[in-house]
Amino acid sequence: MSETIDSCVTSLYVHVPFCAQKCVYCAFYSEASSGELVNRYVAALVRELEMVAADLKPRTIFFGGGTPSLLNMRQWELVLKTMERLNLLGAEEFTVESNPATVSADKAKLMRDYGVNRVSMGVQSLDEELLDRLGRVHSRAMVFKSYDTLRAAGFDNINLDLMFAIPTQTMAVWQDTLNEAMAMGSEHLSSYEVIYEDDTPLFTQLKAGEFSVNEDLACDMYEELIRRATHGGFYQYEIANFARNQRGEAGVHGPPLQEGIPSLACKHNVNYWRGGSFYGLGPSATGYVRGVRSKNWSNTPLYCDQLEKGQRAIESSEELSPLRRAGETAAFGLRMNAGWPFADFERVTRHDLRRDWAEEMNQAVERGWAVRTEERFQLTHQGLRFADSAAELFLK
Image 1 (spheres, rainbow, N blue to C red):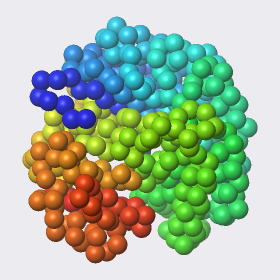
Image 2 (image 1 turned 90 degrees about the horizontal axis):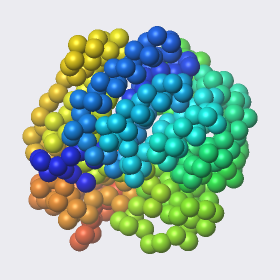
Image 3 (image 1 turned 180 degrees about the horizontal axis):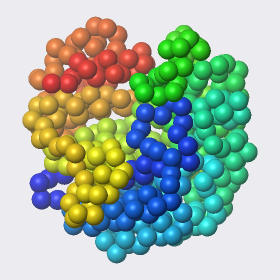
C-alpha cells in the first residue's frame, strides 16, 4: 500500500466544494454553487492536475465533496479530457459521489465512457420528512430514479450512503429505510451516525433545546444496521462500511475474504486506513505523500487565485516523524474489522506494533475494546463503537 521514495503515488482524491444547498449537519468545506466560480474552480483544478500528474499513476480515484455530480456536462468533459491527456485514467476503481437530484443519463454515460466505475450516492434517508429535516434537495423518488439511471448506464458498483440517529428518526422509520435500501441490491453500503459538529445549523438547534440526543437509541440503530446488512449479504469491513464479496444477490457466497476485506470494499478508503499515500486536490483537500501531510486552502476563490498564479494552493504541510506516522497508521487501521496483522503493520510502517505499542494494546484489551492473537490486533464489537477513543491510545 505504501509507496517507495521513487515510485508514483497510486491514489488521488479530488474535492468538489459545491452543493445545491448546504445540509444542516454538514461540517465539510462546501458552499452553494454559483456558475462563474464553478468554472473558475474547474480551470484551477485542471492546473493542479497538471502539476501533480508526473507523480501519479492512479489505482484508485475518488471525487468527493460537496456534490461532484453537480458539475455540468461541459465541466465534467473538461476535467475528464484533462485526465485523459495526462494519462490519469484507467484506475482499477474510480468513484464519484453523487446526489440523487443531480444524476442524469447523459452525465452517467459520460462518466462511464471515461472509466468511472463506482458511484457513491448520498441517500441519507428514504423518509421524506427526514430528508427535509436534513436539508437535502432530493426526494425518495429521485433516489430510485437515479439508481435505475446509473444501472442503465452500466454501473455495477454502487454505494448507498445512509444516516441514522437523525433527530426525530424512530427505530421503525430506520428499519423501513434499511429494508428498502437492501431491496435495491447495491454492492456497497455506508452508514454514519449523525455527528453534531460546531458551526452547523443542527448543532445550533441541539444547543437551543429543539431536540435531544438519545444515545441508547443510536446504539440500537447501529446494532440493527449490522444485523440487517449482514442478513442482506453484506460484510462489515470498517465501522461504517459494508460490502458484498461478489456482485449479484449471492454476495454472501463469494470467494474467501482476503484479510477480512470483501472484494467490493472501497479500495480507495482501504488505502487511507492502511496508511497509503494519496494526493488531495481541490479546496480544503488533504494529501499524504511520502510522510508529508499537506492541506489546501479551505477557500475556493483563494484556491483559484493560487493556481492562476501557477502555484499549488497549499495552506500548510508538515513532515511526520516515522513514529508519529506509524501511530496514525495504527489508529486509522483499527477502524477496520480485520484490525492490524502484525506483519502487515511492520511492512507498511517499519515499526513493530508489539514492541512500540505493547502498553497501549494491553490497555485496549483490559477495557474490552480489543483482542490480541499471535497474528494480529483488532478491536472487538464493543471497541468499534469506541474506535475514536481506542485510536487515541496509539497516537504518538
